[in-house]
Amino acid sequence: MNFQLLSLLLLPSALAQTAPNPILTALGTITSDTTSLNTTVATFNGDPLALIKITVQSAQLLSDINKGTDTANKAANLTLDQTLAIATATLALATDVNQTITTIINTKPKFDKLLVVDPVILLNLKLEQDATRKFSAAVVAKVPEALQSVAQGLTQGIDDSFSEGIAVYEQFL
Ligand SMILES: *[C@@H]1O[C@H](CO)[C@@H](O)[C@H](O)[C@H]1NC(C)=O
Ligand SMILES: *[C@@H]1O[C@H](CO)[C@@H](O)[C@H](O)[C@H]1NC(C)=O
Ligand SMILES: *[C@@H]1O[C@H](CO)[C@@H](O)[C@H](O)[C@H]1NC(C)=O
Image (cartoon, rainbow, N blue to C red; front, side, top):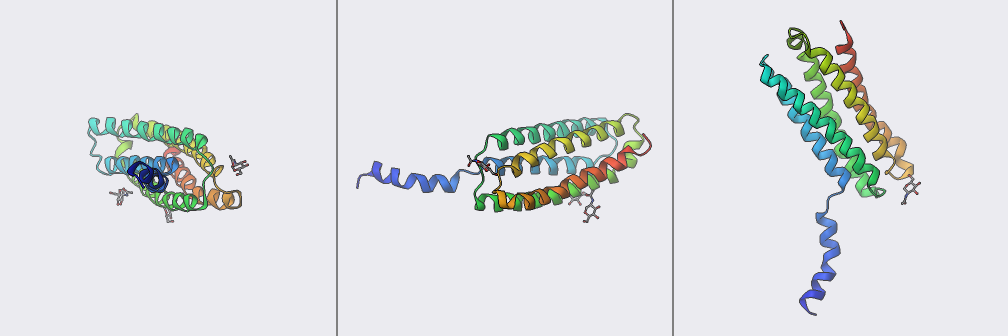
């Protein structure tokens, strides 16, 4: 057997192992954006430069959620294995979103002292919740039909976290 034929035969399994599912990649990007934002908000000390960083990182997160929706819309239907991997990543993201929004809620007293900040945070939370709903719907549509309601349930916790943050930032406005 010559080398070229051998590599052709090996190629499909090698590809299956190395090519990550694009929806899983998008979830990884969104998760890392979320964690970065969490760190910046958690260490906020009133510095205007840190405020700019929070704004930039929020915009990056929003943009990556919207890109994820495009990716999911274009993606092929998910296999069972891919669905399980995405369910696991979604649960991990839900924990990170819970912690990040908790951090954003806990930092509100510091933001309250700077007049314009609260409305900007509120607007970002609303935009991100809306974008996340679209992303979730696009992903759920690619899950095997029998598992779609379970998948929908997994994303509900993320939506609830946003609603909790929005309710806190809507006070006194
Ligand atoms: C978010 O920040 C809080 C406060 O520093 C920390 O306890 C938590 O582990 C962080 N979570 C993530 C996902 O970064
Ligand atoms: C993808 O799955 C949906 C059901 O969730 C089905 O309606 C659609 O035909 C499937 N598309 C392909 C290309 O298999
Ligand atoms: C985070 O999760 C805890 C435990 O389930 C819950 O009590 C809390 O309301 C959640 N907070 C946010 C902002 O999602």
